[in-house]
Length: 393
Ligand code: NAD
Ligand code: MG
Image (cartoon, rainbow, N blue to C red; front, side, top):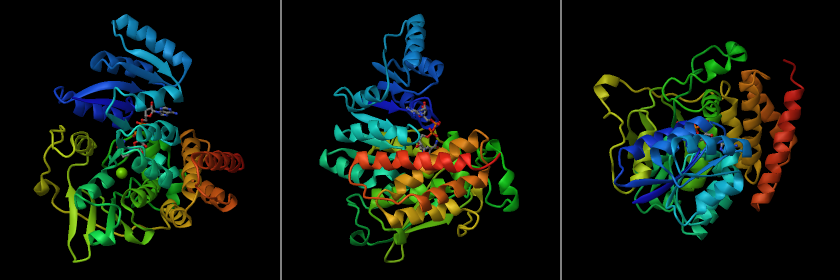
């Protein structure tokens, strides 16, 4: 029986994870569930999956959850805050941690899971973008197992040889081909992008996801973060990672080998496939996702990304090439800018302008410790807020 902690259980990935788990009660048992604010949803999940622990974001939310659980006769223990998140990640009573908190808030508990040598299922790409080297070193030093949940990285993992050790050339890998749908604004006129609304930006053509990653997909910052994620997971340099627009999202990514072979992973765009793959790896289990019917899809298209339309993708490549804390600065500025856009404080195109201004203003340093990374993260957030304050709206 695999005992599982889900960080971010009420989110899009969390809910899909519970959907897969519910199909296999003989294999999986839920140890802990966490959520930030959606207490009623978390209470319903606790009533169904009966975890030993639940963690929320504040003392108020903890009181509320305790009351709801008592009404339902559920004996889940309730706690709150970052230390509690780290405790349920590192507990001796859990084997596997699904890291599905959105943004930098997921870094500490995800690292705690790695430090405790857990099987870490990584959806929270921001954690790896912020602290790539430190994170990978922690995984190695503590014998943790890191399995990618991001559909592209899960696909690449499946297309690489079984004994792959983060050295592309040694494995005959010429390039990693990271596919991208291009999001909802791939073909929209550039002028009209200034005025798009959060709801338009969150209407992804193929995937149903949380609002932050949906906006990231619309700006293609999501692909930029994924380029950095692929760098850390697979040891590929910026020149060995190529982004290919593929609007159907049927090919989830590919690996191109030196002999000319290209191996791709295909499937319907549903996160339960990579989640089930990682939960049961190296076995295969049912995920609830329908089998792919290629004749229904008919044709697959590919094109090059337009960096004028998607400056965030260019900025992410620049941050990866700059190294050090540059990706942490990029990520922090993006989180603040996306939150401001979702709050209607800035326009859609202001997102890339804010990030570019912060990256130009703030010199990056060495990512020598988590403290150094968090200090840069804080400075970048401040700089982004100052930039946003200067944008009249
Ligand atoms: P979401 O917004 O739907 O859910 C986020 C979860 O994190 C919620 O449970 C929320 O309660 C929790 N959370 C938010 N802020 C928190 C905080 N400050 N402290 C503690 N918990 C907090 O997001 P999502 O779409 O499920 O994405 C989660 C992560 O997975 C992101 O890093 C995203 O990039 C990644 N990811 C998502 C998808 C997808 O299809 N949704 C695909 C690939 C990768
Ligand atoms: Mg992805």
